[in-house]
Image (cartoon, rainbow, N blue to C red; front, side, top):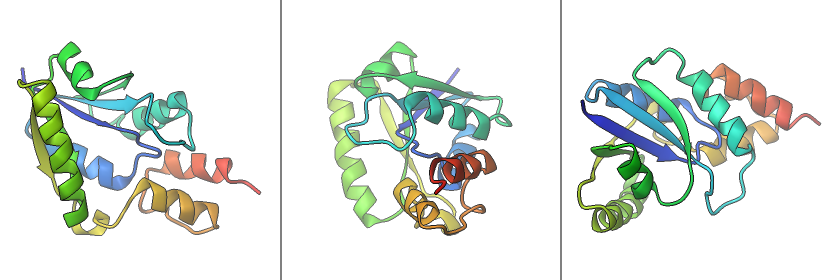
Length: 159
């Protein structure tokens, strides 16, 4: 059985992330959506909130399992016996950053490969940061994120 890991902060998960997941479940028997506990950045949602939003957003994907992980993603990948890491690429700037991460992960755990997916064109510009900012300023992004995330963001930024 081929297992892939798609790890990130997911603060919050967007339709772009879900698009990458939909593409990856066509190729792998199981995809672990790894929600990073320690992210190196300040998050809007707690780890438990991000986990729950990811779980709700992927409820219709039986081959996706959401897990929280702590520490190096390659160590998490080793623990769950993942064969591949999934990463999304939106732009040239993403490629440079993601390539360096993939090379470091390969150095740390030689058995892991990284596969890059490009989201559909309507999601190429999406980022969790942008989504948070637009909602915080009163904008409507309901068609860019799962409804559970939209409701959670509206609640978080209630004035």
